[in-house]
Amino acid sequence: MKISARNYFQQLEQRIQAEASNIDNFLEQRVQILQNVVGLVERAIDLDKDVMKAVAALRGGGSINAENRNERSQQINSVCAHLFPQVEAYPELKAHNAIADAMQQNSYLQREITAARTVYNSRVTQWNTDIFAWPTKMIVAARQGYTTRIPFTASVETREMARSKFF
Image (cartoon, rainbow, N blue to C red; front, side):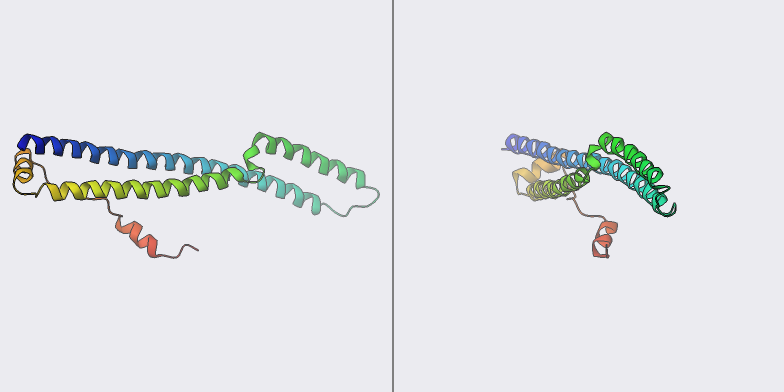
């Protein structure tokens, strides 16, 4: 019975480690997605700035009359010529779909992280309960030096931020 209990604890410990690893994998994916979003947003902002500067410069450059109509038309064509290669170089910026997709992936991964943490906490609760199961599991746990494990909890800062206003 003691050998069976020891094997049980070793298997449970492996499951707990696997669940912790799943959480880490989801967190890493989330970081990668958010880093990609930062780059996309920066490019979108730069593109928007360039376009707005060019438009403002054309609007503020004086009135269009018969004498300067061709010159203004050439300037507008020049701005568009510079704009289109930028948009083609970054097709994900055309409708900012990539940013929306990345934020959707972030939301999905957050749900997966929450689910993985729930599974992890269930395994830890099972571990904590079983090391006190009298007599066999408790004896084996004491001999092996097994102690209770701490389930995942949100940090104090995260709990405070959850109560604050975001918008």
